[in-house]
Image 1 (cartoon, rainbow, N blue to C red):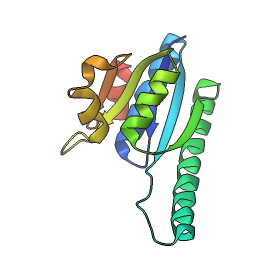
Image 2: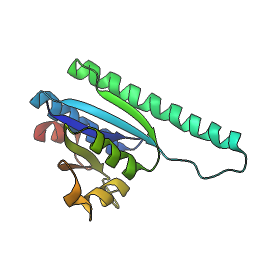
Image 3: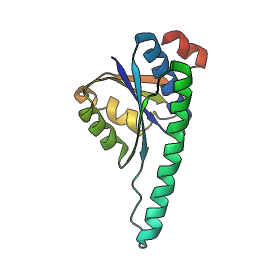
Length: 151
């Protein structure tokens, strides 16, 4: 089974990537894995404050991926695999790919304007040849209809 990995956050680019990946999965009999990455908070002198900030960020990420998973379940008829991880996004994705050998593609969305984003810059740059799977970059300027047509 083809598994498409999508990194979810609150940007329109991640929604674009998820739409493309879900259409590909539906058309190929594949599945979706969604990861939300919560950045590790900088050191705060009061540990309780830092823990509260991290917990709130993790809760927001969980709500985000659960909402995305619910939408995919309605559309595809099956639940995607979801995970919320704390840490550096590039390291989290690399570790996830290493732990899940069945990933068919890492699907990322590029912003419609401006730089492509840190994950695309990292994985499409000098690390591109070291990925264990293809990298699919979905342009942010595509409409839903255009995404549906090409996926």
